[in-house]
Image 1: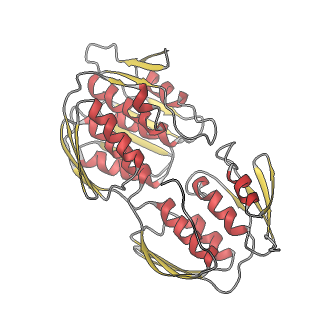
Image 2: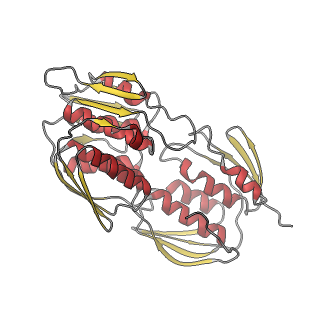
Length: 363
């Protein structure tokens, strides 16, 4: 699709369902590399990144089948342990095949990842964690060459303290630790719901994990994992985006198939801005009360306000009364949307990681 044409000026009414979480599905697919056999995942979103993940798994001798929202991964021992540049460059999450390959087979060659341009997203914390677990890491020709030199080819459990909470680093080390010898403790771990979802699947496979969703995760390594079946959690960013769309357009919208606790920081800000929101166990309803007001927002790792909802919320502030100060603390280059909002007449003053937003006055 090269173009979408939107006719605005209409309120939104009705209900809409949330898809499965992309940021969970991708990690679950790579977790399948930890156990040979048939893995089944339900509620998998139909996205290009999921297709790229399936293509990468296929290059590692896995057979991947999609049936509607279900993906079946039949894992076999790879003929090659290389995740090639042509595949990895498409998606940053591809680096998450490193931990499973290293833990299961004692070796991996993974191209340095590509992906979005929202700022510096180094993988040094991933690599330092694996070094602490006994892996030998060599960076050359754009690839991470990793191996476990011990006779058993198994990583060793250890204590790992992250300099800052890294979602990908937490996931990579957690997966690697499931087959390591001994106990691994991750301190200053990321707390995102997607990490909890990954931990839940790993436990279905036989892993011993405690503390997922908190800042300290403890993993006791086991000798072997087995395939399992799992349903991907709803996408909290999609659910939040749908709420904000309803807030901008006005009306009465119910977002179904979601977990209201996941975008709680957004719900608090929407209520502060003047919207009425009701929550049920698997749905959220938003209603306009006749005009919204600007509120200040600072992005932060979960459970703070998600950086992935910052652009959408800024658009809402453009049509709300008053002045809003939006502060981006997660990524240093995540105001690229400001230029496009300017083209629509928005009154936004970006200052490094802070943007001042005033209500757009129509000519």
